[in-house]
Structures are given as structure tokens and as C-alpha cells.
Image (cartoon, rainbow, N blue to C red; front, side, top):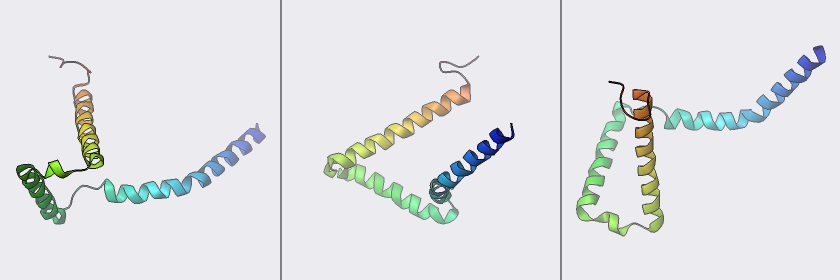
Length: 99
């Protein structure tokens, strides 16, 4: 039984040693990407929305490459899917509300 505990702790230590670089990279990006916007970010957000509206009015979307259009489509689909997943979690049913 003692040898099993020793082997188990050795495996856990090796696993932590191997996972540490990947965890550090994840934490580095998580601190930047997963933080909510600060009040200092609001002007940049407003400018981005203004550019989006201006581009829609002037037809700038017609000048996108196929790659850019495909990436925009994937991002839009991801946002829609996360919205529906949130709806399912919120109502606690896949179909319909419990009325």
C-alpha cells in the first residue's frame, strides 16, 4: 500500500511539472482576455461600434477577403451558439419553459 502511495505521488508530481508551462500560458491569456471591460475601454468600444456601423452603411463588407468573411461568420456563429446555450442553462430545459 505504501508503494502505491509513493507511485501515485510521483505520478502527480510529474503531471504537475509537465502541465505547469501550459497552465502558465493559459493564465497569462486568461488575465488579459477574460477580464471585463474597464471604464477606460469604453471609448475604444464606442469607436469600434461606430466603425462597424459606418462599414455597414458604406458597404465595406463587400471588400473582405474570403478568409476574413469566413472568420467573421465563425465568430458570429459562436456568439449565437453561446447565447442559445445560455438560454438552455437559464431555463433548465432544452425545449420550452416550465410554466
